Image 1 (spheres, helix red, strand yellow):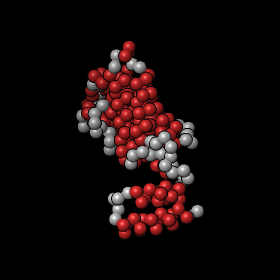
Image 2 (tube, helix red, strand yellow; image 1 turned 90 degrees about the vertical axis):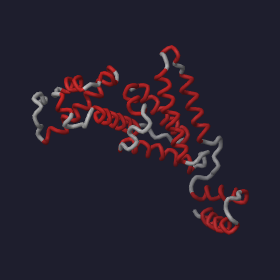
Image 3 (cartoon, one colour; image 1 turned 45 degrees about the horizontal axis):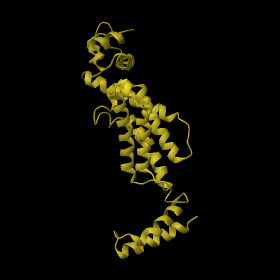
Image 4 (cartoon, helix red, strand yellow; image 1 turned 30 degrees about the vertical axis):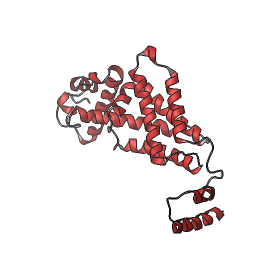
Length: 240
């Protein structure tokens, strides 16, 4: 039953009420924008008295954080049901497109999730999504396709998707051009991947052979360090 009295809820109903409040706030956000998410409006939509909201959330910012977490979880679920793409660069592009599509389909929710620099970065769902992205990047690295280190690649991919969506949403309808999204994606791919794989054979042996071939050209390591690394690479390159 809706909590219309403001009295304490049974233990079994507490999580259901909290979920109902989050769903009501998310629905208001999607239909009417952030300004519509007020204590009174959320309470009415959820079928509770306004004081009941503050038994679940410290304040309205706390409720909005929970709505953002709901958004990260929804986005994560969409990532997990996507088809497996064999080509690692196509897989990267598919993931980027999915992130952008989510933002364009859920503009108010996406703005809440990503419009503030550090919102949601400690969210479990956000971190799980980042692990999926890092898995894509690791595939690129293992195949010799990665132009930059993995951490920087993740930052570039995340920043270009976020920037593309927020820029698109900031534009008047008559100024929105699909070429913006296409160009941003192509720029992202060019920034993080090479045109040809540096490693022709997948796996440690191929990577070791590629690194061994360029080892004499670098000057970062001392002569003793180069000899030791060369020995390790020889062993890895010979492994089957």
